[in-house]
Image (cartoon, rainbow, N blue to C red; front, side):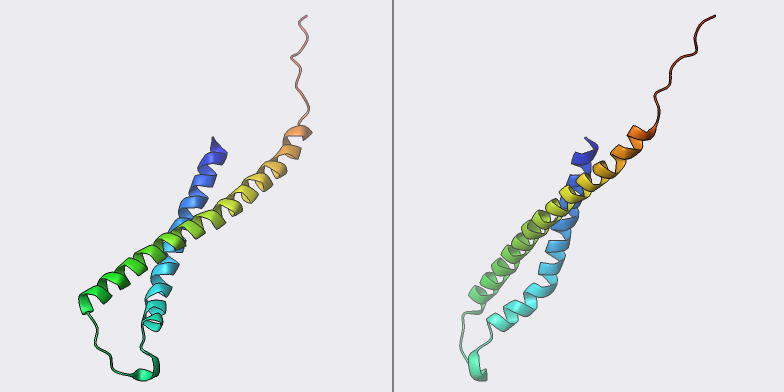
Length: 103
């Protein structure tokens, strides 16, 4: 159960980090992607552009959260395996205790 908690913490941290990175990089990418070429002036339907840009940002945040969760899940599995492998030799070093003989 302890390993499941550790993995869940890694997944949640990765998802949060992915959403933060997508929120930070997303607006710059969307601005670059929706920029008109050669600085020409264009007419556009502004409400449609706003809806599309908002939907794109939300989808990028979802993709970033999923990617972060997947990467941190892999890191969490490696971390759990490393901690279990490191803890086993310590358990084997303790000698078994026998109760004292009755007189």
